[in-house]
Image (cartoon, rainbow, N blue to C red; front, top):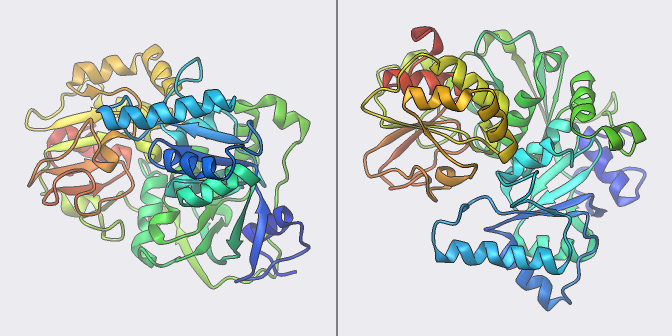
Length: 426
């Protein structure tokens, strides 16, 4: 039938035998997602449509961008979500309790809410994160979110696909962040515009689930409609860990592309040739080898975000910063991605390592990633950040600069006060 993995998922959710590039379809959804920026407008629109949600267990709301609330306006946004969640008895509202608060794209996979073959939309561009688990996931606007909350369906134009063939094995300290920055450097920020980025090849098996989550998270930075990985033993092990009940009950459907699936472009990447990579201002595609820009002094390091705020990221940062000190001329901010990550880091003694190194430890939040709080930059300041965008003014003043990197480079840079690599400090 010549369908890609994404096309098969969309066909299944549209109740069709097959779909083709450019088809307009209506598909049922397994989850719809909103945050404190995008959900309040959607809630207002939904109220004008009658105010009822299609399924209280398939709507997920996470206040994370401006939380803990930094001002009155942000407090009102969270209040809107909170009141709506209580009124509609939304079961997946993440602000308090054991499952706690944090960044939506860290909380959702770690709490077992995503499975292979799911179709998910979120009013946040980095909803594409969940493709790491073999799901179709993409970002939408607040109006589409409102309609989906009411109906459980939304429309799509079936995307073409870019095939990324991964071979070989990663070098030491190279992570999913380096791989996706490398890819964006190759194809550009519009290299996969409204296309599915589908990863395949023997190299996939060398990637951890955290690598895959990071890679899919930044598919949007290449213009992608979504990013998606095949389901393999790594996927199944992760599913078994986070949600034993649904996993064993078989309530999911893994899809594989047809052998004759059509791709608009094929990109081949040998993982052994991917270096520690950074993206210089002001585009994620402005990539360089980290070792080639070691003369760039910095004022701040941010380790966290929906891209690199998982427990493996926090452990990696701690392993590099242990017994070291943050350069006295800079600030290093550590932001665990969720309450669960924070608690694990606390119990493992990682937060003590950061404290002794001189880092600032934040409660889980998106915070500085969008220039909201907990690390906003002043004019002329430069930051090495594990976040996903380095656009002009996104973390503060329009004359500030952001260098995107993986956690190993960020942690080493915090020690030396300039762009650095782990081998320089270990």
